[in-house]
Image (tube, rainbow, N blue to C red; front, side, top):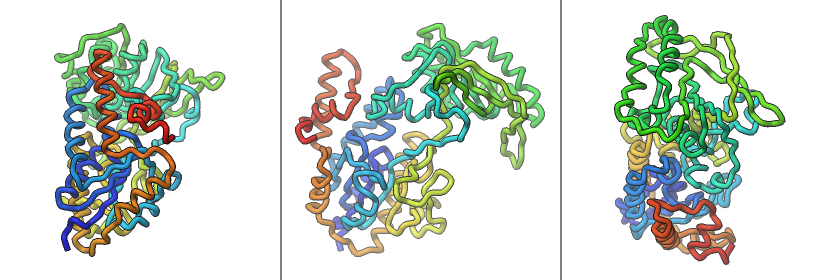
Length: 437
């Protein structure tokens, strides 16, 4: 039987989902994408630092080309999960031959520390979504004060520090790093945007402070120093007198506040241990207080427990003995016919290039599975009827084109490189869909 009658549901339209959709559509399958947000793009649209216009536009172009394929349908503004517009069972009941979950990692990791509920304590993802104008995060009120601490040492920490300094006008931003300078995880390319704010004299003092702990496990301090300072040569010019600091070998233990507002962060000093080539941080029992107005946890994400698939260790359970592995990786969930890709397969792993490769490979795994089945010939009308039954504005491909035109026109009018509506209401209005709300 022709593969053109195979039907696959893809949940989530980030890079992994869209590249998987393209892979499957090119193999002749009919793909129906269900996306929580109005716009496609996921983290490529709402996770990349706002000023990276060229990169974002390049990705949007590829996504547009994918959605132009005749055998791909798109339904935006549809949430999937046990508390969503549709459950996973609803989607399966429509008769798709397979489903791929590529909805990212929508849960937030919590360390379960005292004071996490104080105003001024946030998760990185909420902040990134806020400044990238993803509803409803774009409407959330944040308390960004003059003194901010970010827990983590990856590219997300760098992006958030840039935003705090350049946009929120923070005066002091400190990265709290559990291990030493050798274990920082940002790229030189990202760090050049922030390095200009690093107080070098203070940095040298911090290096000397951690030297004994590094020497104890034979780590070379100079390697760590270079890893951080190599981006100095290409440093962006400063736009304020703000200061950026590193606080190495430290883990947060509690947040304290007054009247519900954060005022202090307690950290514990760590020592380093090494076993089988792996460096770990261990609390040394010495605690100290930092005066802060804002604390942001940039420690990675986890999948959404309420999605409807079994989870363990912040991830969806995967078949450990996959029938359809690609490059030795399992894309199969523990439920027959349901696959996982991108951050839904491995939370917080890699950037857009990684998501692209993982999406393509997930699509290949799904296609291998389809070859073992007789196509069910899903009725497109049944899917349309299901969408109508939700009694809310459902976004299709033509709507997205219209929205892009209106936003491009708005950017031109305002003389800016990019314009984005920050609320669903404004987007629906721009697409002429408000009357159906």
